[in-house]
Length: 281
Image (cartoon, rainbow, N blue to C red; front, side):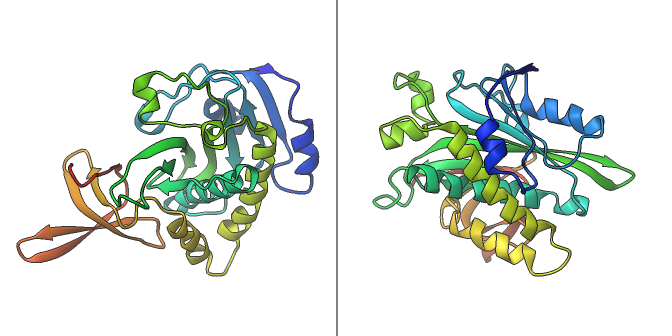
């Protein structure tokens, strides 16, 4: 990593939270990889690495993730949670909710959460229930497990903030950035501070030793969902499931209603690649 000079304001604003250790770099290969290496060397929970540019950013299913230098908020966060391995996904959900809330507070833009881990702008759903969506960001979580115990979770977040207006056609059709929606550039550090402040709150909820943490967080995930109520196609690798997205369970699974000769079958999807279908699809 090449250390940059930014982040002083974030460190000051986040003092007293679990995320005060903000390390802002000018360029790196992958912030997730950097934080995984820090975790392996014993770094404590709360380390945050932010990069102006990633040379080898990745999304879900090992898809490459490209962003113009200083155009996006690119960050990874280290957790050392007292959670069962099966519950690690709650941190991804908490990051998604926090990112959506931060976008709203800083820019006035309200992105939605496309299950399982994307932030999207629902461009014309009010007039067309099958309307188009454009990706605003994504989340990639990676875990370290030893002896069946969760040792570390690294949550990577990428948000498109200040992108050039002349995007390639193939990108402009599927992605957008906050400045395209507001008409002006935003301060990425303001967005970082707002996001980590929200995530500190939701981390308290997720990591609380008792209480109805799953319902509290999932109620927010449902409220911000772009997927519920849509016709979707879910790629499970060995098969595809197509139907209406009916529900998000407290365990974070997506329930899809599939029409069959015998009636509506409820399929519970734990992991899969979701496509929002338009009426003509």
